[in-house]
Length: 209
Image (tube, rainbow, N blue to C red):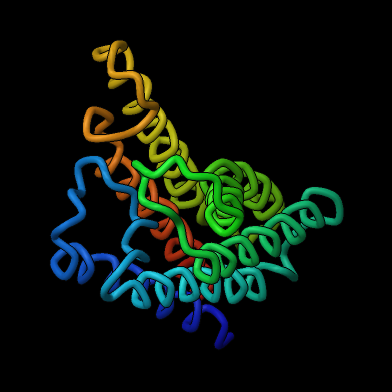
């Protein structure tokens, strides 16, 4: 199917844009700044484009795995992936505030909600999808890769939130819930990369059929 290639291409483009922004926007320290902050200021349109690419990759992936998903867990996975895809487009449309800016802002609130949907629920829906796919003999033959990809995204999520917890334990008097004392930037990037790798792994398996 063409959808596998589309999904992989857009996933890779997302990674390339993210890497490029690391050099273009040096004012954002990657040790504690979130990737969403690349939307702010010059070249911000590139980060928005990156989110659109990721969302397109998700929708293309869904087309690929749609026929292989079971009725119950498969239906949950389909709807959930649609929600994640919409959330990624929402993250691109609604620009975030700087992480140090606590000013109430509807646009930032929508972006934060979209980001939370992607970050918190991606490993869950991916696990549901893999559970469903493993009932199919074609996918079962690639069980090792499927399990590897699924474990990887959970590691990404744990590393991200673990870094926040550890930083706050080490510096409980810092006050602010985020900032230069919370080194969540690299873990945030690592987590996102694991999510993208999962997409590429699933598409790669589908290309074998």
